[in-house]
Length: 210
Length: 210
DNA sequence: ACGAATGTGGTACTCAGTACCATAATGTTG
DNA sequence: CAACATTATGGTACTGAGTACCACATTCGT
Image (cartoon, rainbow over all chains, first blue to last red; front, side, top):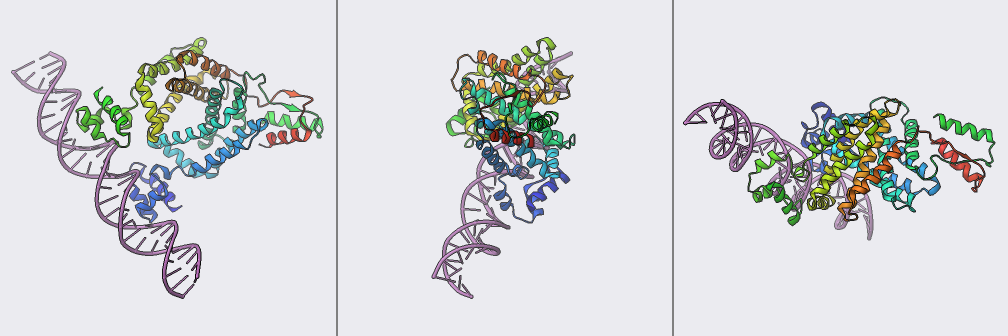
């Protein structure tokens, strides 16, 4: 989108506060009205696709049954991570801007809270039999978002080249923390499969070492 | 403060968006300039004392040695909870407004993020010897804020009369989750599952491929 | 009682965001 | 292809938040 490009260009050149919506519209070759019709606000031009991501997450979480819910949560977080990583430089530009402009930081926080609520809503059923289901869902949702942010931040800063692997690891910690007091602190693996035991063991070892 | 009273009155009467800063200043009997000198923005008039609370938290967390750090975290969270509970009706008014006005919700989220960062910064030293100290600190900080919010929300809605006791309980869960050992993603192996081999293999494959 | 610091109110400005209208582009149906 | 409906666009004018600046009052220290 030409408008987004123009906006990022100007924000880098002059800074966010020093750039007016008129400036963006002018460089993009459109009218001011058109800008506001596409992006509800000046801030929104930096954070695209939020609604779509939320919908994807929601769908992924809903598609899980009790047995695959850990995987679903991890993969839902991975969807978001993957989206940012796919953006590449643009994500890093955004990160830089957010670090400088408080208003953008607020906006980002607001978005993350939406993720958190989406996760929490999908996670309550996990502890359906417990009286503290809502609390545990809130805790796990907060942890999922925190873990995702931690890994994403590392990637944005260039501290890692394998963000997805790090997310797996971080989410492993989150899942095991959430599973506390449930009797088991870890997942269950079964023999009796059609594969040879050695094959299964090898794969398990891979998972542990990752 | 007369300005705060006037603001809450008008917000309840006409709603937040329908109230201008001029309206508030007029009812409070002050000039518009004075309003903005005391509260940097229209939103800020609803969220007072943030900086002081952050300072209190920081101080409480810094005053802890390794042996009393769990207590310190719990009490730091309790400081915030106590502050809101002490506000009484005003806190509930704010809660109602936040539920209705998106802009205020964003602002609230931003504030909570500051708490979260304050906690995270103070918590890193807890896992100083581990390579994933920052992640674990982030996770615990997120959990602390989530637990506090959960209890506060229950009190705001009138679901409990003993919020401090509930906070203790919730923080107990948070602390025990945070104390879990190294982030092994899977450990226990179980034989003789009642699941079909195909089902098991499919699940393992999903986990391994993720 | 004096000057200095600080608090206050007013005026004028910028800019984000909204409402409305007039016009161009596109698509649909006969 | 022509007439029409739909939708995207651009312009104008407005409201209201937030800032800058200045003149004036209040309070304080000595």
